[in-house]
Image 1 (cartoon, rainbow, N blue to C red):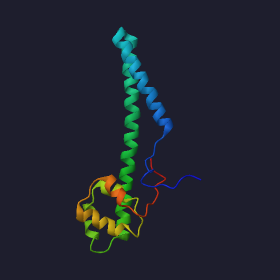
Image 2: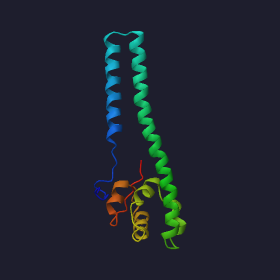
Image 3: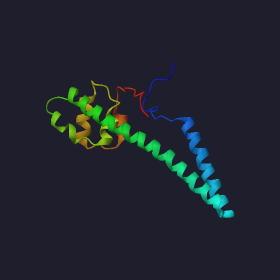
Image 4: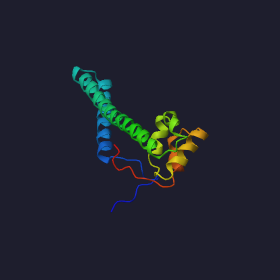
Length: 143
């Protein structure tokens, strides 16, 4: 049985993705070395293609994370509409993306008080907000 998700272990690392990124980066470095050592048409082509592959891998991950963050933002606004008291309802759109993304780990019972504190104290840092969560709700569907 997997370990329950907490603040300490919630970051998702995908070993195969990291391995592929390392291989692509090493290849890019090797290609650049070959290009510097003796420029040829083949070494130029290899350097351009290997650099493009590294960028592709980085952009693909970035695009997936950006899409995930947009879904989280929408999900949290809907969730806040359900759990916040009436006096905080008009402030739902005052939350920054980072605040919404960090608040997603809070359970429904603690979310209203934590959301009010985040707005009142102007806490914007994701890590700080996540560390304030007492009733951690795992997000096992993240990218």
